[in-house]
Image (cartoon, rainbow, N blue to C red; front, side):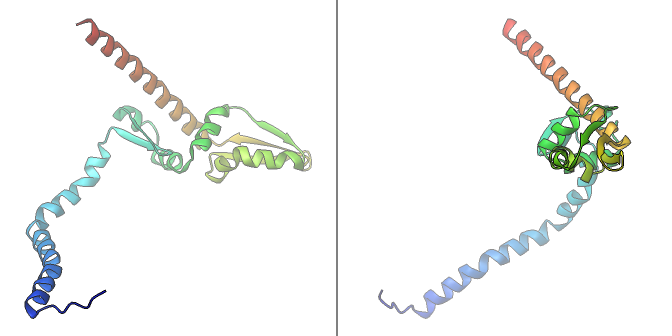
Amino acid sequence: MENIKKSTFELCVELIRALAWPVIAAALLISFWQPLRETANLLPSILHRSDAITIAGLSLKVSHELRHEAPPDVQAKLRRLSPSGIEALLNHGENTKMIYEGKSEEKRAEERWGELVANELAYKESYDDGARFFVALTPVGVKARSYLVSIISEFIKGLADASAQEAAAKDE
């Protein structure tokens, strides 16, 4: 590589180019500070009125009535669940106790229900002097499961409505 000497003028131009974009960005930020601050202050109320809810990375559009049907603690616990955790919650009956016997089944139960137990949506209880145990939903787990079922019901209703609208559009 050749060492090319740059003139003072070229060095000044490069310095100005390197410093210009931060100065322009700062000037824009200062000039738009008030509108940006007002927008940032409006975000919480906009998000509160949102018709979408995100659970396990899946965003669904739901009605305000359905969204407010679940208490905030249930919504927070559902947000922390993985897709397999949601599947486990839906597969567990509301009044069902999943019974396991012995240490050999404890690992299987932990794999299947561990996430629900960790998020306090289910609990594990031993009986028969620890020889057996069961996993059942907590009251919050029952609410969360019911909420998921109502979301699925509304989602299916939305699919049916969309199909009907699509069929009506084809007829026109």
